[in-house]
Image 1: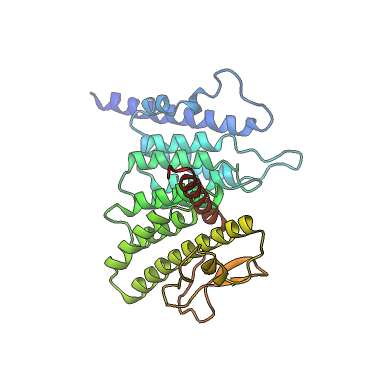
Image 2: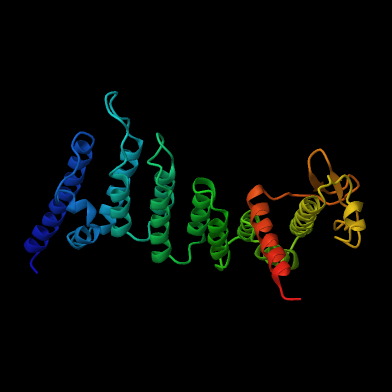
Length: 317
């Protein structure tokens, strides 16, 4: 190839790249007033086609489209317009197709997509899709799993999915140990108590400092207290349904043969029944640092107890 031909090819590539960028900019400027129709967004909606047309300028175009995505996200609409983020996902998709290793685009892009109106489009599922693309292209980046878990936890209120994402990230060699703690906490809040117990036990056994070991011990003790409380409260409900009497003291369960004795928490303090609150709680003398789980976990556990109760009731004698 002659020097002249090389210059012409390079110049042609720059011009083509500028035309592609100009096309996207025109659509961004017109999108608010004119919804897209037909194939006019082909150059935006088909990033793979644009990558093939980039003539080796993928990194440059990735930087430019990421910059345009940031500018587009941060722009302020006119007073007569409502904020629209229709072009945000296509721009992020373009940037990450041109350069699949731009970790910042996946991470900040997911944050942009998941933010609720008017700050963002309020599309956490698209944020998950973008992070999954990042994981596919960069499988050893634990931060993508952390971000994915955060989106599930904060925006979708799905503790179980968040726990799974944190756990996947925690298994990567470079992942920090606290990511497994997040997984354990999220699994516990989702009602996955056995999984949470396994993770906290693993952290307790592998802890390299007393503070980490103590934190894991407190969570393990808290899981035990929650299970004990919920089982006792379940028995209280069944006792009252069967007898028609209002329980005032856990000794009534012992006298009725529902339990052999009043159980104690991990510190040896017996549980107490609060008639006014209609619940079982650790005794004031308890020495356990208690982290109670939320209502979602209790609901899941109660469903498990109901299933066990029904199975025992209908089992052949």
